[in-house]
Length: 262
Image (cartoon, rainbow, N blue to C red):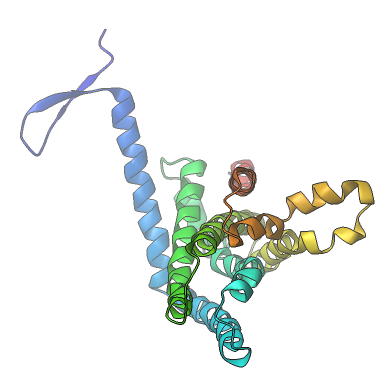
């Protein structure tokens, strides 16, 4: 009995044998990108991305140019130093609508009746919020170009800082997806996402509140601690694995939450 099936190639009119796994993979990819385009267009066809992006870029620009003009220092240290907190504020604001809004409008029930897994829905929503965050981060490259225009720019901390920012955006985006899966409305999702994200961002700054024996462990769990190495131009594999694992953890929690309700 053959493990493949015959389909019609509409481009050439010929028939070709396609393995069932290949056909299923194509369906998965097609469905994912359809959901991804739906979510991504939802950001840029509504004021959400523009309002949040304007506030984010306004704050980052004021931080950078205040150091640049007031203190006459052409550097990105201040910008990268506060980026973990800024992203902790940005990502929950972007992700609060992903699931909570659909549940409020009643479209989530319609979405879950489609022949698509919860994992695929979550992956598409996460990818959309992450790509949106990268779009909002892209204009900040002008800060690096400004510094380069006034003197030699060390590319290591810049490249490392933006790589760390992308991983941080992924981790906080996953936190936001989880918060939106738990909450019944966008406001609760925003507050819950902010609490978790800011806690992770500020954890290495409050290690003095923990017993001395647990300081190193608590410090390692803070996202700000891991971002420091990126901002110095050092790409530590442990920090990369930690941030990716953090993203996977909260996405898995979101899937579990939605599967339980589904």
